[in-house]
Image (cartoon, rainbow, N blue to C red; front, top):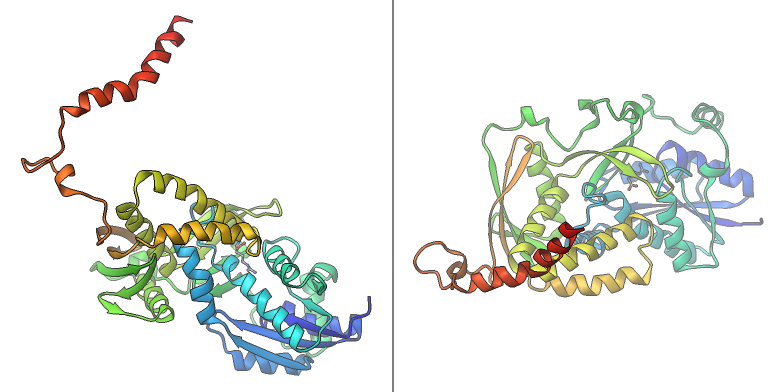
Amino acid sequence: MSISRIALAYSGGLDTSVAIKWLSERYGSKVITVTVDVGQGEDFKAIGEKALRVGAEHHYTIDAKEEFVRGFIFPSIKANGLYQGKYPISTALSRPLIAKKLIEVAHKEGCDAVAHGCTGKGNDQLRIEISCRALDPTMKILAPTREWGMSRDQEVEYAMKHGIPISKAAKKYSIDQNLWGRSIESGPLENPWTAPEEDGWEWTKAPELAPDTPRNVELRFSNGVPVAIDGEECQPLDLIRKLNKIAGEHGVGRIDHMEDRIVGIKSRETYECPAAVTVLEAHKDLEKLVLNRHELSFKRMVDEQWTYLVYAGLWEDPLREELDAFIDKANERVEGRVRVRLYKGSLAITGRESPNSVYDFKTATYDSSSTFDQTLSKGFVELWGLPTVVSRKLVSRR
Ligand code: ARG
């Protein structure tokens, strides 16, 4: 395969640094590195310098935080995006955006290939490659870490031979982080019975060390997304950052579960997603105040399908946008306030309020002002139970 210019998605870590050298040796091509800022909070200047030092021809740092929040996190909030009921799909959401930026740079730089550092065992390869191919089916895609067949030790040796800097402490965990959360994998966590050690957590306090007084946070939503915190309007980016701090300080947002990767691997995954966990709980609760039961039960299925598509790397599938149309429509009424109580690792919704509430005090109350005519229930009970009672009779006769 003859390739002259490659745009490489670059994190600054060992794999993608080795990839710069390996790709230029293997293909005799120029490598242009691209680091997308999705709120991982790293030293982007140092990352860029490292890329050039290792041998990149050019380096791009692309600030995509705003786009990440509005175009990816917000739709996920509206879809109550939790994979297998637990994981706020934080890594999954960032990949299609990284792919989009990678393709943009590849076009600008006249590249004939893009490359990424995902391994063959995870979901990220699906997300990056399928998005890249959907956006430009003619672009070649290279996955050096999947092909070079080097073990970790050989990789370190290769790096030393080529003067690629290696961080001193061999990393205990594999980390990926962005505004919506931080995923911590591998090392001691590979035994599902081993409790996560404290040194893996960075964004959340140990619940037992969290403040002794509970913190009530009030979130205001408009069109299904959070717009104010404690009565103060807030830009989306600031709101999420603020909430990551507040909830993390109270030990809220730690996740430890068994997960099914799309490649078929069952894995133990841990995450810390203080803002995501808080916002998603509040959003789900507010939906229950403003949507009726038919909408809610249908939306649960749509939400699940949406989340599955995104987790599985199919962000670019037209179905995702079609589901978004329904989700957006249902969220037009998701407006109001939710009070969340954070206390030593626990989160509880203690109040909700909306101008679009379908809660009617007069029908619900047990006091004398109730307008609900209980005499009507007699016939309702009879008819509602009719099919069950009739079939039960037949079944018992058999
Ligand atoms: N299991 C999660 C997912 O598939 C986390 C992946 C973390 N990625 C990484 N490169 N460390 O979304």
